Image 1 (cartoon, one colour):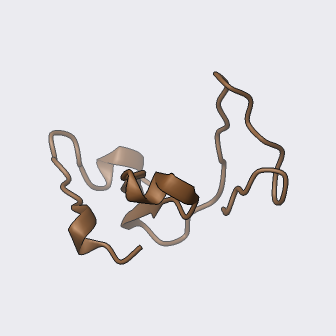
Image 2: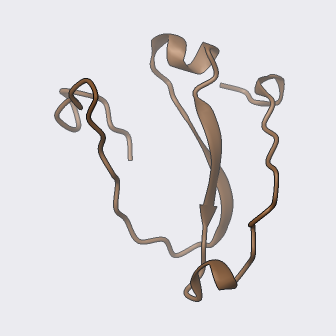
Length: 75
């Protein structure tokens, strides 16, 4: 899932979006981040939740708050 425009996929036009679809075999939490230019230093990162076969009923993350601090990340 390394979507570098014009290298691994076509660029996404201004105002458009792209949805990745993939199968997850390890469930839990992780995070996303960018390696591109100022996106990493400006804080383009966030949490990901991978639900198990039972969907969101497997683990209920509703009402949870996630805190990621840039100082804790080695980008």
